[in-house]
Every structure is written in C-alpha cells, then in structure tokens.
Amino acid sequence: MLEQLERANLFIVALDTQRLWYRYHALFAQAVRHRLEQTQPALVPILYDRASRWYARQGRLNEAIAHAITARQWLWAADLIEQVYTSIWGNSQHARLRRWLEQLPAEVMCTRPRLCLAYAKTAFMVAPYTTVERWLHDAEIALRSTAPAATPASISEAAEGGESSTQQERDDLLGAIAAQRAIITGYYLGKGHAVLTFCQEALAHLSEQNLLARAEVAYARSLAYHSFGDIVASIQSTKEATALAQAAGDTSSTIIYQCRTAYCLLAHGKLHEVVQITRQAARLGSTPAGLPHAMTCWASLFQADALREWNRLDEALDVALQGVRLSEQTETIVALYLGYTILMRIYLAQGEMDAARLAFQRAEEALMKTYSPYRRDAYLIVNWVQFWLASGEMERALNWLQEIAPHPSAPSPSTNEHSPLAHERALLRNQERKQGPPPYLDELLDAFSSEHITHSSPPSTSRQPKGHLLEQPLIEPLSERELEVLHLIARGDSNQEIAEILVIAVVTVKRHVTHIFEKLGVNNRMQAVVRARSLGLLTDET
Image (tube, rainbow, N blue to C red; front, side, top):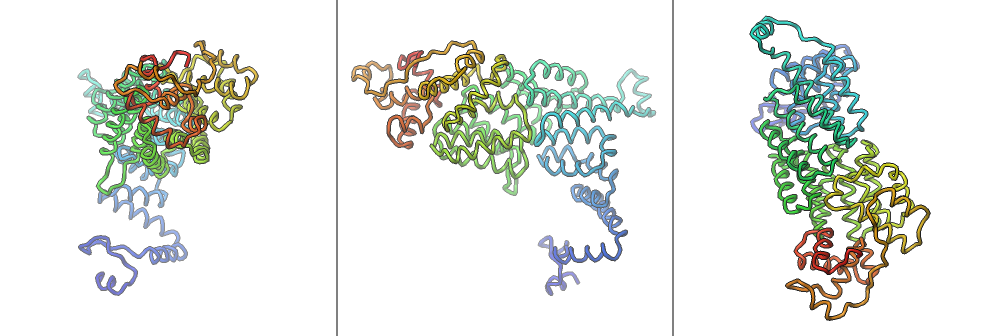
C-alpha cells in the first residue's frame, strides 16, 4: 500500500532505500496538523506526548525531547534532557541544548541542578559573566536545597564507613559547579588567585573517576597561569586538561583544550606547534558527514593567526573565514570577537582598510554580547589599538589608555612573551611624531607602564653604505631595501604603512618581509626584531 501511494505521488516520502520508513510530504503534514488543530485542539498535546514516548522507547531522544516540549510535558522533557545533555554537549550541539532548556519553565529548572549547570555551560558560549554566574548560583542553591533521601543501600554503605553513591554524585556535582566557576572567573575576569581557590574547592569534591570535571579544573588553572603571564605553566595545564578529556572520551572538550594549548603556544611564538595542534584538532572534529565539529572554529582561527605571522596572508584569510563562518553557524559567539579581530589583522596586513574596518566593527559587536573588559584589554586591545592608529583614530587609542591608566597592574597575558603593549606604545610615539604630541600622552603612557620608552626619530630611509652589508653576520645578507623594511617593522609600521613610506606596492612589501624572515631564520615580526637586534642589525633605540 505505501509503495503504491509513493508511486502515485500521494503525499508520502520514503526515508530509507529499503522503503521501510516513510513520512508525509512536508506540505501535506502541515495541512493535516492545521486541520487537527482546528477540529480537535485538545488532542494535539496528547498525540505529541505519545510520539515523544514512542521516540524515547526507540532510543531517539532528540526527537523525544522535541515532541515532549511541544506537548508541554515539562517534567518528562526535563527527565529526557538530563539523560542526554552530556552527550549533546560532548558533540558540541550546545545551541540545540540551550534552546531546549530555554523553553522549560523556571519552576522546573530551579529544581534541577544538573540542568542549571548545563544551561550555564551553554550560556558561556553566548552570554556575559553575570548570566553564567547566575545559573551556577541557581544550580548550587537547587542542589543544596534537595537533601538526598536515605535508602537501604546508602544506610548500609554509611554503616560500613564508606560514602554512599548518592552523596558522591552530589559531591561531584558541587565539584563541577566550582570547576565551572573557576573557568568563568579566569575567562571573563582574569582573577587568577580566585580561580585557583575555586579549583581547590572543586578538587575537594570531585571523585578520582570524574575525569571530565578534573579536565575542567586543569583548564581553569591554565587560565589563571595565563593571567599571571606564566605561559609555560599555562601550556602544561592545557595539555593535562587535553589528556583528561581524551581519557573521558569527550570530543568537544578535547578540541577546546587542544585549541587553548595552541593559543598559549601562539603567545609563546611556537608557530609550527600551533599549526600541528590545530590540524590535529580539525581532524578530531571531522565527522562522517563531512561537517566540522563546532569547536574546530577555534582551531581554524589560531591556525590562521600563525599563517598571518608567517606572512602567508591568502592562506590565513581562507582559514580565518572558515573559522568565523563556523562560529556564526554554530552560535559560538564567544569565539567571534577573536575571530573577527584575527580577520582584521589579516586585512590590515593586506592593506585592505575597508575590510579591516568592517571586521573590527563586527568584533566589537560580538564582544558586547559576552562583554568582558578583561578579555578586551588582555586579548584584543593591542590589536585594536593597532587598527585605530592605522585608520587614523588616534583619539580612540588615547581614550583607552586614559581608561586603563588607573589600573597599570593588569598586563596582557602575552606581555611576558612578546611585549605587545610596548609595541603599541611605540606606535603611539610614532603617531606623536607624525601629528604632534596630543595632550596628556606622556602622562598616560607613563601611568600605563613604568617601562622606559625611548623617544627616537623615525629611521632614515636613505641607502645604507655598501660596507654595512658586508658586516652582516648572516650567510645571505639582507639587501639595502630589506634593511629599510626591517627598520620600519621594528618601528611598528604595518605593510600598508611601509608601502606608503617606501613608495612601493604592498605585495612588494610582503615579499621583502618573507625574505627577511627566511634570512633571519624566524617566523614572525617580533622574532625578526629580536634576532636582528642580537645580530647588531638594529639598535635598542630602533
């Protein structure tokens, strides 16, 4: 009968090649549902509830949850979500989980500490600190307000001097809440000492077998060490988190921690290791259907930044765009402001000012959704100041310095490795030389850091004497033009600015930069400047 209906094109569609499963054509199904709602509205939730329970018996919990929510069977839906939320999170379908939980009434959520914790973890991807903390608070209140019921098994375990399984489950949940608090405190606030306190609290509750929550603790520690500027310790902690997540079999967390390791290595200047790890994460996140795992957006973004450091700008742009698109498609807002900032830097290096401006605007918009002054100042602002200066927005750069001047003790986590803030101060000095000193510039810069800044004149673009080239301690000396480009790199000029100063094309500047990297045996601009100074090609005042 069904095959006859299909051949007659009578509103049914086969779901498999064996013709064992069928569904109504979408338009016909919509018409039938509308007719049912008009003629027998009371029957609609009953039928959805029946469908939900049938799907649950078949083990198809996603469909069961969707039908339970439509039927407004809230307790049944909550029961189903509690069964599946860990696997949903592990597969990084956090947007789907968040939408399910947002439909449950508050009175249901407030009695389910696991669901409050689950929502806090999904909100981390799209919401600011206050939202996430509120749900963690609700999770803890719900847990502490529901004392575990005594059972014969728990009484027997207590009599034998052991801890009941119910009590251990409660302790593990308290530990997981503390671990998540540690993560958001480190991620959004950068309060390293508070993070380590939460980590100790989490470990006091967690069982040895709770590998995933222990991985979260290790990840939180990496954030704390990063806030202290200890990149090496941060890398060690992210590697520990990765190993624990792998042992727990959680793909999503493994990819996140691998990518965090890549970010730390990027700050440490280990670009080859960055590319290696991000490619591993991308392979782990590949699916049989060919769709990338949501968390591989981070891998694409950090790989793109490494490629940009190597001046492989076209490759960097393609990979960065992949990461940004995946972040948008999977609603991973927490990655977008970094993704658009990396895009902005690539466009700046290519001399595409309009594209860089659009990317910067979108980075600002994304940051506002999960707003954190710490993340702005520690992870983004150095690059944003560079953009403001490149686009002539001197006032914005000075406004930021004025805002942060009362708090000079909050350095960028990468300051110990690359001194990027010193680099941006040099850019401000250059702008001062070009346009004249704006009011309070010296006061603001001095308030921001006690580090001495040499006020030198712009490097000369005149030809170097021939004899200078013969004195270079390199197998293949830098050409006169490459030395000019090197001095401008040390001064902090972008490819576009170098092109304008030397009156050459941006693509020619890129070629010179690539040759400089190859001759000096380095991978990025900062390494080039350090190497050149060690060889005597640049002075400390350059």
